Length: 148
Image (cartoon, rainbow, N blue to C red; front, side, top):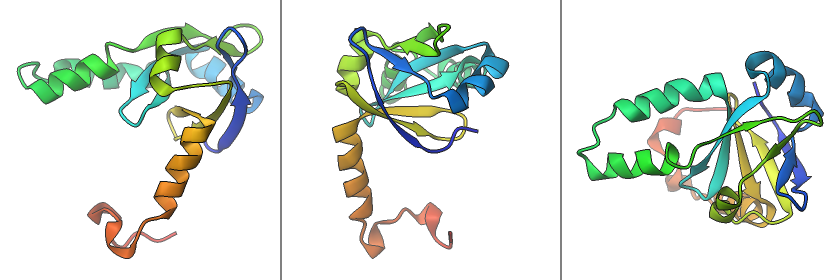
């Protein structure tokens, strides 16, 4: 399980150093083989390959005759890139993916259980501000009765 928020920097070549606390789990679960794809929220999603495979299969099994479904397939599967952690625990984030998410040097890696989100730091801060601006009636019905 991937939890927590880590502020990181992309190097000049667009490489991201995966935090050491996650590397062991990633090496044992997928030998450092990750899938990076886009998210409609304008961030990137990073999955261990075994976690991505059933998602990709479900997406590919959806009917491509429905335009919204086909657009989602194009977005998520079409932009998915296989990456390997190098000996230093870094992955290369391709220029098209960096451009899609507006990634600059300063980024935020957000653990989301089975995957990570990778955000431009400025966009992440805006996302948090928007989330904290919820009013009482703004919460989705799925969260009714949810308590921390």
